[in-house]
Amino acid sequence: MKYSLRSSFARLTLILFVVVFLLTVVGRIVTVTGAWAFCLGWPLCVPSEPLGYLKLAHLALVGVAMLLMVWLLRKAWREQRDQNVLLPLTTVTGVLFFGQALIGAVEVTRSYPVHLVVLHALTAVALWISLGSLVYLSGVLAVDTNVVVKFDYRQRAKDFFILSKPIIVLLLLVTTYSGLVAGSQAWPSASLTFWTLLGGTLAAAGSSALNQYIDRELDKNMQRTAKRPLADGRLTAAEGLSYGLALCLTSYYVMAGFVNLLAALLSLTGIFYYVFFYSVWLKKATVQNIVIGGGAGAIPPMVGWAAATGNLGLAAWILFAIVFMWTPPHFWALAIVRMKDYEKAGVPMMPVVHGEEKTRKHILIYTVELIAVTLLLPIFNLAGMVYAVSAVVLGGFLLYAAWRVFKVGGNKVAWTMYRWSSMYLAFIFLALMIDAVV
Image 1 (cartoon, one colour):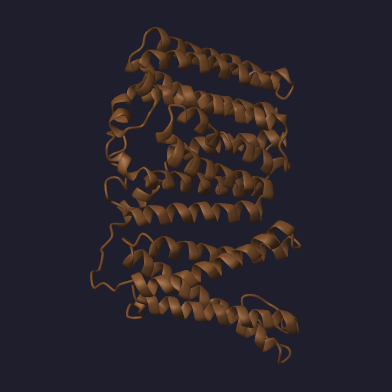
Image 2: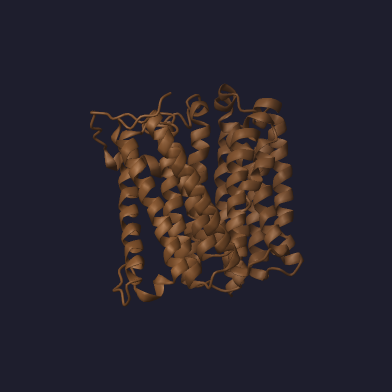
């Protein structure tokens, strides 16, 4: 394939590259000469010495580069929707560009912590690699189109919302916030709460979008998922991939910049665990997919705890274990209801591989183990009576549902177990929060 500047997208990309290059050179000169001291203020400044005009030029180039980046992103999302390389690469480049600016501003206000200085430098390297790649690939792949796409923006907003799996995100935020409150042993500050939950929302939504991108062909074969935006074709594969990558990358900048390094790394670990370890490999590889993959959903309460304390104590690991043990009986109950779907899609869920009877037995066993794990917090004096009583009562209801799955069988009781287990997880973490603040 031959490089060409025939497309307006390729020309705009090259212009952006030149402006960012000039921005970098002028910025370096401003730093070396100390010109920043002669033009104070932001976003504009008034030079007090001739050198100050270098700082003013640098600020002007920042503004121009930002406008060009926004323009390029707009063109990419309107004109390159079917480009599985260009659209994701442009989107990632945009996130890196604005992420570097964000981290650069935050590190100044926080007296240059080492992890932000390193992140700023790594982002700069990644930005140049992605921008250089984009310059070349846009000249090879980009094409101008005379077709004006008329979007139904309301439907698109709904589709991107669905792509984020909002119900799962909400449940993960409950566990994240519970870990935050439990770690603080009080209601955390509004600022810490906002940034932790924003970062958690972006990470969970981005991971869910990437999961649907990976499963888009598989989803077509399952009644439960056939109408998802990517499987149904309402969004292109490139849009799903770009959206997921953008949210996941942004979540790390939010966590690292406004929470702390440990919370950011844990959140990133959860993303990799769910997207690569579970979605790409485990889901179709083993009947233990849900058991092992449950670790991804168990990380959010640890993120909350780390956000509050900056470390991981025994309680944080028990919270991890609670969600880890909750995941198999919850999803095996759903798998019983949707067994034909999973069989048709070739997903080796336990009912498909070992049959419903063995699955019902394992649901009961894991439920008993889950209840035992929840009682470790009061046993080790890490929670009080409010949580202890709640764990026993809620555990009793869940055990009754699991017992009915084991003894009665059938889709109706399995669906009841699935719904009750969702409420169980939310309520037991709510009890943990109440216990921490009373």
